[in-house]
Image (cartoon, rainbow, N blue to C red; front, top):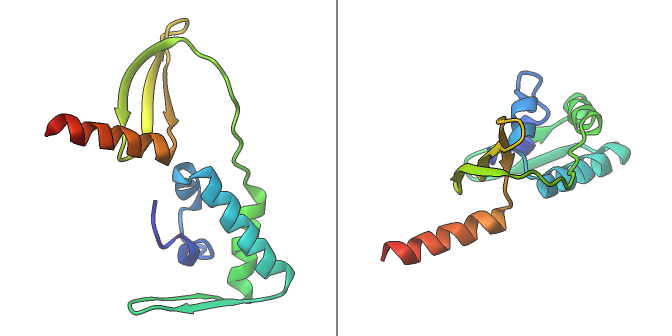
Length: 126
């Protein structure tokens, strides 16, 4: 995911829906809470780093708050029998062929599972 999300979230031209699709649930909740706290306090945000400045003024705070509160990431636990077609530990996604419908389902995996897979892969490659 783009590490400039906090900067871009308030940019009207930013493709927020694409970022939302790639966003980890925990990250979404933390950023949503942070933006809500700033918005509810009538605050703005300015962070200066070596190579960039994040500046969310009042109008951009409204955009960020509006985007975060209009969107929800939900997780449902379902059981599907199928064949694992592919797994990308870098993108943290999988493809599964549903044995009942033959539909290819793409989903996300946790950072922990992805890291575990990469660690095992490194050991096997030695």
